[in-house]
Amino acid sequence: MTIILASTSQIRAQILARAGLDFVTAAPRVDEEAIRDAMQADGASPRDIADSLAEAKALKISDKNAQALVLGCDQILALGDVIFTKPETPDHAISQLHALRGQTHHLYSAIVIYQNGQPLWRHIGHARLTMRAMSDQALASYVATAWESIRHSVGCYKIEERGIQLFSQIDGDVFTIQGLPLLPLLNYLALRGIIAS
Image 1 (cartoon, helix red, strand yellow):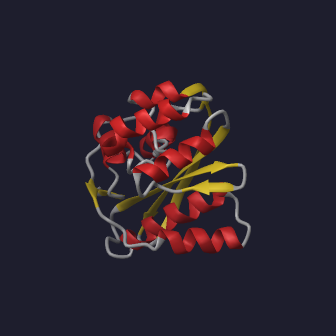
Image 2 (cartoon, rainbow, N blue to C red):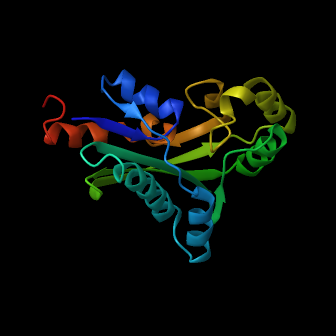
């Protein structure tokens, strides 16, 4: 069975490849900002927004690849009622890190599987991360040295790299934090007989 990752995320592709899955990637053309803004205006929770974005991506690719198992993924970072987006510039990243330091924020990583244009399975992983109260200079130095690596990360950090130094406590698994709840996905694929069980 063909598995399609409806994402251009290199991190998600690396997670699946290292887990030994055979898959292809496809870029879903979804207006994420419009969906996110509309749902926020309606008072939707960050968890529901992540789920809806993942579903929109899976549906978009499934419509053109009916027989394939399509994996749609999305991640939302929330600090209280504020939802963060990927940084557009280094200054934007620094500003976001200033808001996150000394605080506990939440990551919601959703994965939705579609086949034949229908949803088959979904999971929303949740992680809580508490950032140390780092100095302006330390955060500016981090962004200056890590910008090319973190520019596509919603939290402006990667815990699998130097970004782990930003945190005092993490509750949640590494795959959820990286944007793809791998273990629940593997359990589902095993139940379907797609991987060995």
